[in-house]
Image (tube, rainbow, N blue to C red):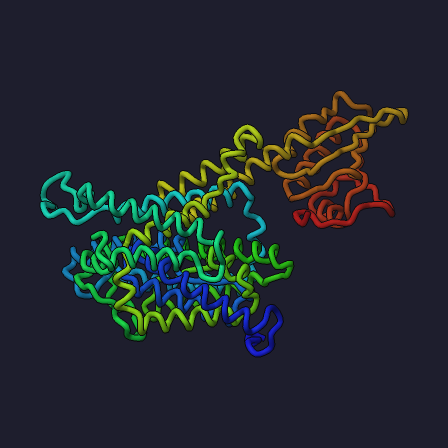
Length: 540
């Protein structure tokens, strides 16, 4: 079932191979940039991209979709890396590198959660995420990534004193350094934007990296490189070219207050963010290729890839919207394209380490600025005054939670809950009860809309036994009874009419509703006819 690497169903070997090479070249700078956002070394992001790309391309539910280390996951896990490093300093365990161990534990647990998500076949629930929530999610993600780039314009403070209140660990670079980095980042962005207008034969990201890197190597400008960042954070200027090794997080102080909650909570957030972004990307590629992917299978593959990534020293990840679009537009429609990208990236890591560390950080910052521009939903700015105010409120709420709490999963869940509450409130306004007095001595109420917990109160308040004749019929032909709250409301209304000495009958209820009413109460009188609708309550 999973091994369909031999038989080609989409695309062809040549297109997939060339597209995979293109994607591999574009993956290098992004994987490194996301590593720095997470607060880990470049190898952690690079090997994560290899694991994620190879496993999901081989076994996932969407051929042609590219997975790797992403900004969404980097933002989520950056907290545990920072807290882990702080705990290491408190406990005198700096050599154990607790920040990385916290990270690996998070990704292994997140992978397990994603596998369970896929086994439970919950991938379909991505359909319940409204579009305003999606927009707020990507906007918040873009803003957080943007804010993370400004730390590269800072340097360690030589006068930092942790005992002095207000002493900053990092300060802004000198003016000349800021100007140089700003100009090189701007040059990178210009090349990425304009080069595709000349040709698409070579990835514009790669061209931008080579041009800016060449300018730096030739000595025209002196600017910060990846080697400098490595030295600032890890005391080395070299990038190891060794294969990944088993990295079991055995030194985590689980007994320390808050550690278990932090790791498990972050793992759940990472799992949900990865699933949401992956299934969003899957839907996008489905629309572009007019084919259908399999969300539950993708969840299983993502979970397995994240577990193995954490087990072998990677930061994990999920589907990458930008790289997936590059792959599809370059002709990569089959699984082979992602496999080639992962294998070529592994080759880059093993033989091109000395070249990678010479890449100017300004080039990576420029790449990430372009990622921010491409990620942000600029259509959001056009929604003001054109869409309902409650949708704008949801977009803003999700964006703010993402930016200020750095919890993407919480932001999405909050947005879904807000959207559901708004929907319930608005739907409750659309229940109509039309009175029909054409039959002498009998009043018929024709109900229109959905009767559920949000609308039963308004429905009940409109029925006053003292104002009605001795016989009343409620017709549900143009309505739906959605939940148990509705059935209970019908039971209460019937008791009110019986208490007033009047007869009430219910017409055009589904057999399932009739059965539930009969089981709940013997007071309700229901008419059964051949034209009764057939539906299950709570299964609209």
